[in-house]
Image 1 (cartoon, rainbow, N blue to C red):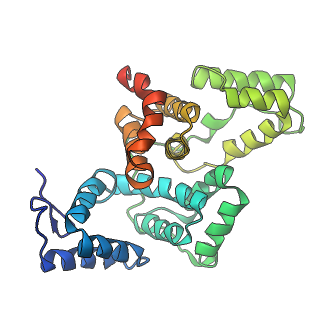
Image 2: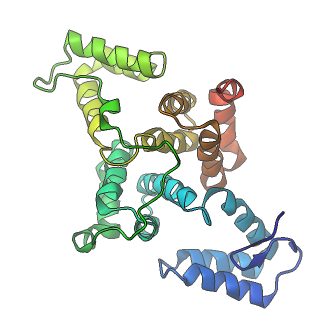
Image 3: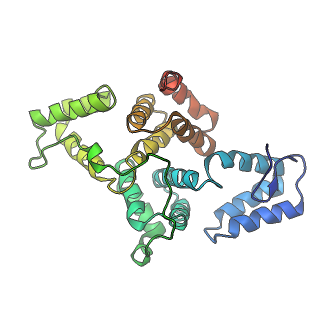
Length: 288
């Protein structure tokens, strides 16, 4: 059944009433977030209402009305908006996640993990978007943010056993890091091999940051954000690594697919799926 969604009758793509338009805009304004979703929807509804209805149809796959979907999509979006420097979007996702029960501490874990990719520039965008409000954030609303079944915090899963009493990448560190990758995803990625060969001290400290970024969020958030990042950047090797890590940590086949296709819907179009086909088609075909 196609049905209706957020005030729009999706069974009648060829006609859109004024009542439908108003109902959709009232729904979007009901949570009093940034106005961009209202004006973006207004542009579609005023000038391409059939397109607007199809966009809402697609959005139902990845976000509202499922709260778990909202949490996962908004978590990916914080990462992407930090990369893009879109401060309105960052603010909107903070509001969305807080409204759906995510604590300030968990939000900032998303930010710190994303800093590994967005750098100090990304943190600057976060501060300009929400930094002055953060000290006033209270406890999260109930119920707390829902995650898919089996998604749990496990900070120890990130740890390779590096010796952080020295900046040097010791022989024991190399062995431990190699074994972590081989045990978890089945091989040592070329990116790590390159770093170990040419700047091992950087690999050590950057890996250490990766290991401590997510403490209370489910560990599965890490590969889920990586799915978004590498779909957008077109990194075949990175996307395959993300999918393998997700599989090792209990992300389902359907969740991997949604993490990729949602990224295509909102950021890359069909062209983003070229990398996905090259990177993970064989994995998805044989997923158990």
